Length: 579
Image (cartoon, rainbow, N blue to C red):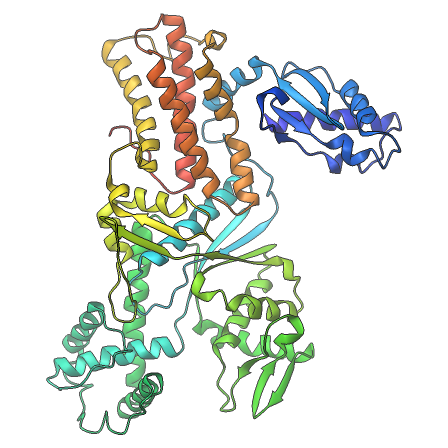
């Protein structure tokens, strides 16, 4: 509906341009919004207020000229001027009735648009270190990122989803050490396992796998292994990593490293696939060293005058771009920092020609935003191309009690466990039903309940109810939509008009969700649509109606079924026909 009003306004502007009233740029100011109150019509535009100063006239006078220039249309019942110069559009009832056929004739297309046509967008999300299974916090980022990519594609954007594999660096070294120490225990060695190593059962499983494959090939005399370690935990574990490398050598340490990394990446990939999250690319951090992008990005920063040397290290002038301190990219020992890898990855992203690069970070990575924005701009890129979206933590509750979690100690609820308990559909919907930057209290009991209080159940039940109506028709041998053409003019009940108006909004909701990177708007909309439908269903009979009225109502609820299915698909949620 909104697109039709915009098109009519564009025709009016074109007519006034030919008359010399408006200049060539006037069409760029066209904007139309839904009104908040029915008394003000269905849509309103402030076009006259935006252009009045340019043409040296009052907004109301210009609004009168615009309304007079509107072409005749069966869609618009009246267009009137309100307040200082708003143009309010009252749509004809027949315009809303046309929505039913528009939906039913091209069901897959309804809700889709081309506002993003020609724009390439990268969406990088999850990208957790492969040091263990995904937990429920990662699940929120996965559900949000995948829903965002789906919504962007529905709005015509060429959206590319990518997972950045952190398969290099200290955390992976700690995982390799953790596996080795558990392996030594399986070899009969008595050792005190560090508190800040990875504690989960998956580490024991990897150690058992290593023992089965290699026997005691990697077993050593551990009498000297834990002697004279620093008191500080982090320094102590770094010393243990160094001793592990010394005892095993680089080649065998790489075997441990790869065993842990490959197993965890495979587990993460499978977990996400089962969750319905499929990435178009899995990008390895190690490849940045192999393809030379780390050196290229640092060289580019040097050429742009943003690198200096101090204390034997190379520093990036991050403070020149708003960061709170400068950042080391190459240590005095010649090793690249994590930040150098992150900078190189964004150098690589920019080289691939995306119009927009979206990073979805967990709240614990909020501190990386300024430094990465700084290096991205310093590399010569438009800083507006890079956008960070922060996903807050998800806190689980069972029986009203908060469930505590700690990744390093292994005391956490995995995404796989959550999916097994509440199902993929409830998990995905609950994750995306709020703005990502808001904390999420995930009520496990509510997610499993079969009641109207459970939003995903409530929405899916609306779809299943509609499917049930059509099954009953078939069982009774009653006429269906394939037997005759409905007369939608018979839809006169207030609840029917409410449902029609709600259905008509779906394309606008998808566009807004894409433009604002806000798939939660689709979740809000679906809850509203389900509520309007259930209200209608409970107020009016379907099977017992007169044939012509029943046929019209069947068309309306069939359109509702299609929109619910399209909306849930954008969120990665299934649409059951029976519940």
